[in-house]
Amino acid sequence: MNRKVTVVGGAGNVGATVARAIADKELADVVIIDIAEQKAKGIALDMYEACPIEGSDARIIGAGADEAGWKETADSDVVVVTSGVPRKPGMSRDDLLNVNYKIMQSVTEQIVKYSPKTIIVPVANPLDAMCQAVYRLSRFPRERVIGMAGILDSSRMRTFIAMEAGVSVENVHAFVLGGHGDTMVPLARYSTVAGIPVTELIAKDRLDAIIQRTRDGGAEIVKYLKTGSAYYAPAASAVEMAESILRDRKKVLPCAAYLEGEYGVNGLYVGVPVKLGQKGIEQVIEINLTLEERAALQKSAASVKELVDVIGV
Ligand code: NAD
Image 1 (spheres, protein in one colour):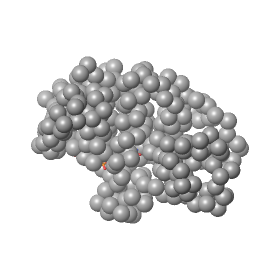
Image 2 (cartoon, rainbow, N blue to C red):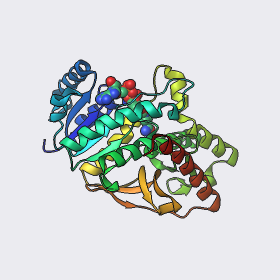
Image 3 (cartoon, rainbow, N blue to C red):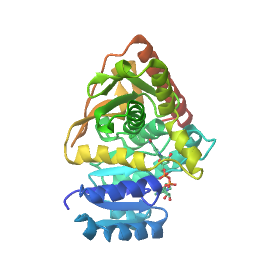
Image 4 (cartoon, helix red, strand yellow):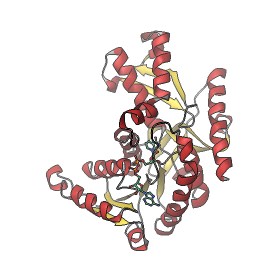
């Protein structure tokens, strides 16, 4: 194929699920890079061997995170960065800060070296701080470093609304803004079922419970899995971003973007609606917020700032 997606940390749960979906949808050839080199090679070959059945001509290769491996990634159109430690029960995403920052340092250098024109989609947590690290280290324009979190948080909220209203998930739209953590800002006012505001369909106490469950959505899965965190919905979210970029679909999606004054936030990654196309972020979309919503977004931005200050990016 004439497009290439690299998945760094692709032998892990989120990365492998991303790689498989990209191949299944025939979006691009896939390079899986992982320090677990043998596992990367094994799962890549296994996925390749599924392609004749799926009818996909995507080529998938696996490689180690050494120079020879990184060479294979040259001129990638999109690089999804899932390399990073996931949280375990009792841990917050912020507990992963220092260890995952070190991983961002080593992988960003190689991404820039081999794919200077690529678009990077960081997924590792704590998401907004890792985006800021990759943005600063890569020196790419903000259009080309876009974090995955809002699609996942919104998808969780959409699922809970669909469960509550007993309707198709396809009918439900929801927006979750802010940082990908406990201070995220689920916006009931901008959430709809077939265009009808959810505030007209679902009682306030039930809606409040849905909002809280959305905030705790990641922890709910961690509690069940015990040894790691969610990966099916996170991977689907990253793939939606890659698809919108590779096919220039210009979808409006909530993503972590580096703000330069939008929403009153300056010089920080926060989740906001953006238009995603072949150039990456083609527009940061500003929606009107109530004073209360704006304050919640500011609070969320402040908690991202605390983390980026710790690692000094
Ligand atoms: P995982 O442990 O299954 O996979 C991580 C992979 O990264 C492993 O295969 C590991 O070998 C690899 N790796 C580590 N250091 C590397 C390096 N320097 N170079 C290449 N590969 C390296 O974890 P997972 O469940 O796939 O989660 C991955 C990350 O994504 C975690 O940080 C997790 O918190 C995060 N995550 C974020 C979201 C989100 O909404 N943004 C959602 C889910 C998971």
